[in-house]
Image (cartoon, rainbow, N blue to C red; front, side):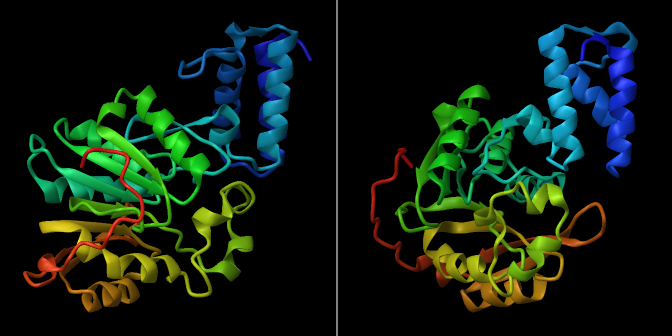
Length: 301
């Protein structure tokens, strides 16, 4: 398959539309730009010619997208908070809805010039922590992920974004390797009910890692593991921000309240669905002892 981009583009649009993709033309144009080595540019198909190698890349990418592999995984990158993040098999594909968590955290911190200390549990690509660091020039962050591959990719993303000097990554199980206190703890843990995962969009069910999706039989397993540990890791007046499923606000609020949190706020996404909870500890819980570290943190926080 060689020739002018216009003919290849029209073939791709037909193929993607037949696969049931509602934005076939837009996605075909993005794939064409990627194959031509012009990713990030607005290209006009009539102006593009592909050599044999580029045409083969284009055809392979169209085949992958028609089989419902996400475009972001085909091109190897997802934009989040207007920043480019590389993806890998061990990381969740960042969703625009998660930007609500970043926005809510920034609003609650208020001042952007303070040396806030941030913890991101289940960091994945590092998108939440690194988006926050991009807005908070004096802040530092620690990202924790159970997957060593995800932790390595988060570090690489920090390097590419020029934020590695303020971001450290720990490969570990939630809070077990931590001993410091943080001003802000954020997390987008796995919260999908296990039995419902096969019914998700193929882009998610087939391509996002199960470890980042599976919240157990009721979707709350990760919250039960995380929430009781959070108060002991927060600095006085610290803030917790958790992404949740749209029907989990009451259940996760109950876990937060039982763990000594107060002023639990719900934040909705652009569709008006519950998306995040933010909470602060009461005066008593801020004095709880920090749990002992099982391994030294890899950063000076």
